[in-house]
Length: 157
Image (cartoon, rainbow, N blue to C red; front, side, top):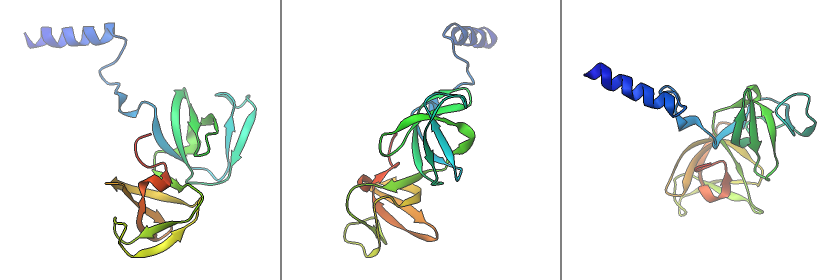
C-alpha cells in the first residue's frame, strides 16, 4: 500500500513537470551581493552581450529577478537591470543605505537608543537579522542597528 501511494505521488509530480527534489525556496526573486571587485552587468546572459555597467563595489546588494543557466538577471538599488554571471555573486546578505540624508546606526533596535554612527547614503554593510523595522548591520568591524526603511536589500525581495 505504501509503495503504491509513493508511486502515485512520484507519478503526479512527474506529470506536473516538477521534481520532488526541486524546491521553490531558492526561486527568484531573492537577494545576493556582488562578490567580485569588478563585475560586468550585461544586456543578455552571455559574455558576447554588450556591457551596460561595471560594478567596483564588492558587497553591493542585488535582487535576482530571473535565472538562466549560469546567469542571473539582477536589479540594483537604483533600478539598473541586466545579466551577471553567477560566479560574481554570493548569497551573503548585504544592504545599502538609501535616501538623501545620513541615517543613524544605533546601539539597540529603537529610535531612542544611543547613536553610534551616522551612515551616509551609499554605505554598504553586511546585513544581519531584521525585526520590527530594525536591521542588525556590520560595516567593517562596527555594528549596530539601522532602520529597515533606510536600507535597500533588507526585507523580502
